[in-house]
Length: 60
Image 1 (cartoon, one colour):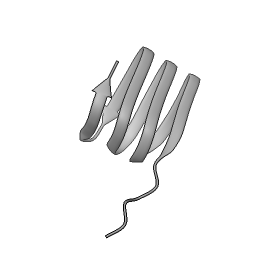
Image 2 (cartoon, rainbow, N blue to C red; image 1 turned 30 degrees about the vertical axis):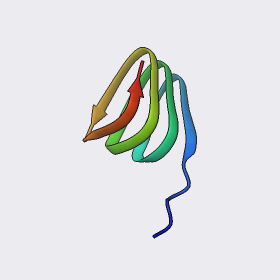
Image 3 (cartoon, rainbow, N blue to C red; image 1 turned 60 degrees about the vertical axis):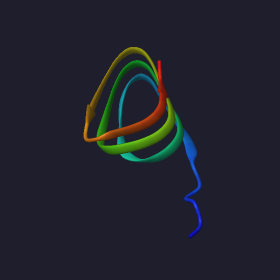
Image 4 (spheres, rainbow, N blue to C red; image 1 turned 180 degrees about the vertical axis):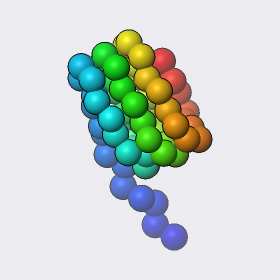
């Protein structure tokens, strides 16, 4: 079974993203993740609301 390719996603200022599989999720400001998120790294500077389950190796 092949592993899903992981991309990076960035929220700057204010914004929403859909849950999914990511390498790095970065929120600088106010972010909202709608749905389950699986990420190697979640970085926040500000506030981040996650409506779903979280699977991550590191969260800062």
